[in-house]
Image (cartoon, rainbow, N blue to C red; front, side):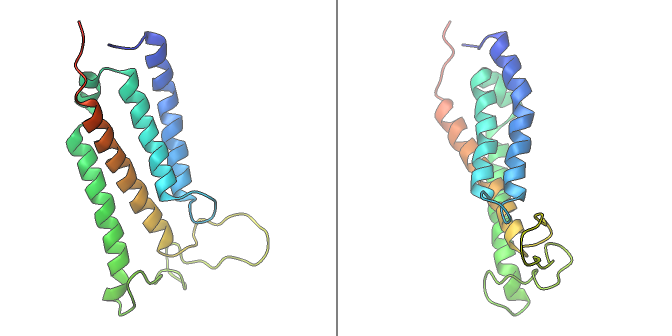
Amino acid sequence: MQMSLIVRTAADVLFPFIMVYGLYIIIHGHVTPGGGFQGGAILASGVLLLLLAYRYQEFTRIIRMVMMKSLESTGLLLFIIAALSAMVLGAGFFYNWLFPGGLIFGEFVPFGPGPANLNTGGVIPIMNIAVGIEVVGAIGVILLALLSGIKERI
């Protein structure tokens, strides 16, 4: 059964805001409460909103299971590469090699209160991004698998 025009329009309007908020939570995860898992769950709730507002068949024409599986694999691969990258440089597994003076995410945090600087954290923001991608892919796969059994009633 398809939802009403009001529900679909509301879902279309809310979806970009949910996506931006989820990305905000992921990107700011190393300086504020939140991170990759929380932001990925918010992104997946946006996917769920569209999945519930439209028919399963309409939704799967745009978002496919293969796309969600590839997001999950990409996030996991990025996480593993970021964790193993320090070992290539001769440091330990998960060593924060970007932090002391790196070009990206390598600035020091000033002492005392002040505005949050996103260019800090070293490898941690990369890990947050990887976890966010993996979580939205995994929850998307779960949602699509669970709702694939729904058959349209006449």
